[in-house]
Amino acid sequence: MSKYIIKRLLLFIPSALGILLVVFVLVRLVPGDVVAAMAGDASVSEADRQIIQRQLGLDRPLVVQFVVWFGNVLQGDFGQSIWEKRPVVDMLKERIPRSLELTAIAVTLGVVWGITLGVISAIRRRTLVDYVVRVISIAGISLPSFVTGILLLYLMLKLFHWSPPVFYETIWANPGSNLVHQMLPAMVLGFAAAAPIARLTRSSLLEVIGEDYMRTARAKGLSERVVIMRHALKNALLPVITLSGGLVAGLLGGVVIVEAIFVIPGMGTGLIDAVTQRDYPALQAYVIVMSLIYLTVNLLVDLSYGLIDPRIRYG
Image (cartoon, rainbow, N blue to C red; front, side, top):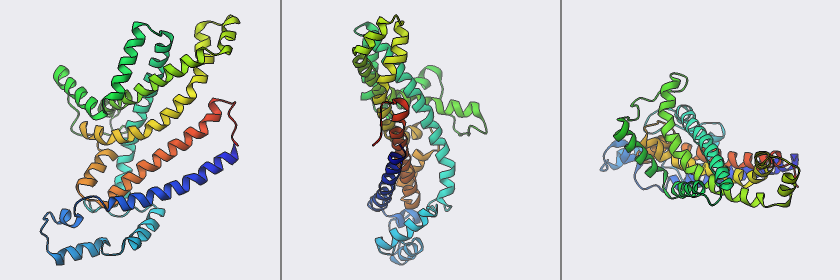
């Protein structure tokens, strides 16, 4: 187990370095001119343009820019925001907890809903309940998060005359207001995550239920509930956990749009602002943080296999 952990950690390093390089290059391929965006006028003079580029270090070769930027990142310095005129690290400290809170609530809702619906669908196979769950799952997979979010927001406005609070309050300042603000977007993301989890849970559980050891468990006189929960579900969860880890990428992508819809000042809205404002340092930081979160979750999912299924041994 320890050797496997070391190998996975060693693989984590080149993956992270590759992300840094790709993000640095792709950000500079974003259409638009950062100098014109800062000056607020696309026809800024060439002399002013050169001064701004020199101040930002954009007049240097890309290789030099990358080496300088990479050295700063290793020290935890993502540079100064071009638009907000303050350290990007301070912006990350404000926005990361908000997005992580939203993602955590969404993942929790998605896993609970997905596994519950999948188990119910498998137990009630080929009944009305099964068909309803499968239709819901297909809808969750088919509808993008931004469509679900807009529909839910429209229904809340139309039926209950409710709209997202204008001012965002942290969970430490006002827990009630914070949860009200976070719950609807978390439900949107959780619904998108629950749909594939429910389908996979159903198929995995149906496959496990037909195994010989399940018939043996029933022959011992165990109740159907004990057979399903203690034996079948435990063995059916491994592919579900793999899928749940991969869904984090989808949730992080959905956060970008959902946060904008429900006015949550997290990494998603920060990323959109950074793109529109050509704020290179902030844009790089948001993409890197999201990518590292995704890599970390995948690492934790891989390491969790042995804890869930003791039969798994790492070579």
